[in-house]
Amino acid sequence: MSFFKHELATVSLEADIGEGTRIWARTNIQSGAKIGQHCNICDGTFVEKGAIIGDHVTVKHNVSVFNGVVIGDDVFIGSNIAFINDRYPRSHRQDEWTLEKTWIKKGATLGANVTILCGLTVGEYAVVGAGSVVTGDVPAYTIVCGNPAREKGFACQCGRPLNDYLKCHCEKQYFLTEEGRIVEK
Image 1: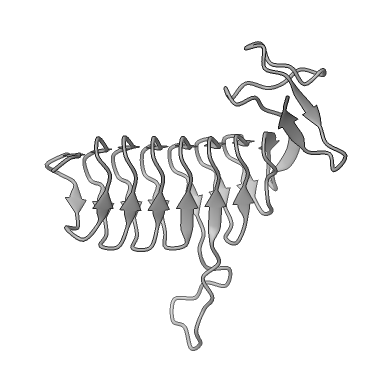
Image 2: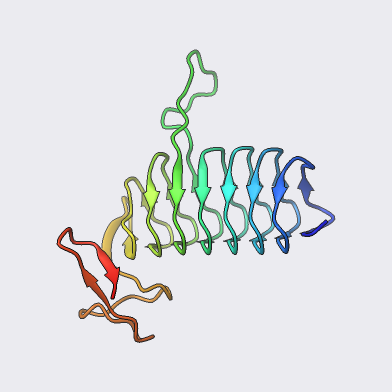
């Protein structure tokens, strides 16, 4: 085994787990789930078949990553996040439902207790504030907060907010495109 599995974790032999990943207690990884290299999957996490988690991802406590959720590399997922994969859930379905994929792109940060509705994208290095409810796409490098989540500013790759001149304390400089999106210089 090229990954660490806590003795109280349940990991299917048919799950694809990358080298150096750590899976902690009371975690359940189903057959058909894919988790990249050097991830930290904390206590009480559930990863359903069909879910994909990239490399160097931290998934904090009590998170369920359902089928259709695709998490890119270097993403931080805070505690108690709710990913939704059914827009019209019912206990007993008479008809087929449509799986709407949710994309969390490279370097994004989702704060604790965030709810992410299905069928949307959180862009590269975006930051979603704790407790937010995300009902639409979040552009790259954008900070959103609230219920529903609204744009509050822009973030650097290091995760800190940019100043009014789109510069970070780490000295990275960004600029706005004609479409109003942020890009690194």
